[in-house]
Image (cartoon, rainbow, N blue to C red; front, side, top):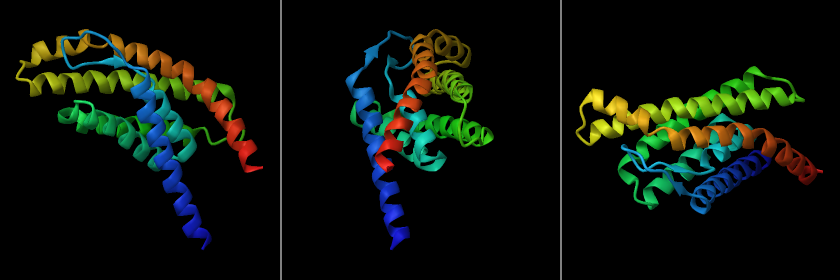
Length: 183
């Protein structure tokens, strides 16, 4: 019975985080003009990182894939939602790997800051590659796709900087909240 309760709790929290990620994108969405895709500033990436930190790599990845991928499907980006899900897989793998590498029980602040920065840098790389794929899908030549993808990075850079700032702040706030709920 205890195992079933734990599995149900995991499913509920994964679904809750997926909804929080979706709402985090839906509430604040500032479009940024770009030659490739329709990038916008949002908090979905930071929330996905937090989901991985609190739920673990697999469940955080699932929450991010549902939240970010679901947003894409329901808001006019369905054709490229599979790329978003691939980005989530890479992001969750990097964040989860670093979190395991820093295996301390009482995580120093600098560990979470490093994870936030690494998540931001990972997102810049994956978004650049995704933009190249999107341009190629639209029939653009490779050289043009590479340049256009680079010029399309401003929204990603802003999202990455906000991720690096928001993750450490919210991690410690949420950690205290979850700790007080358990007791």
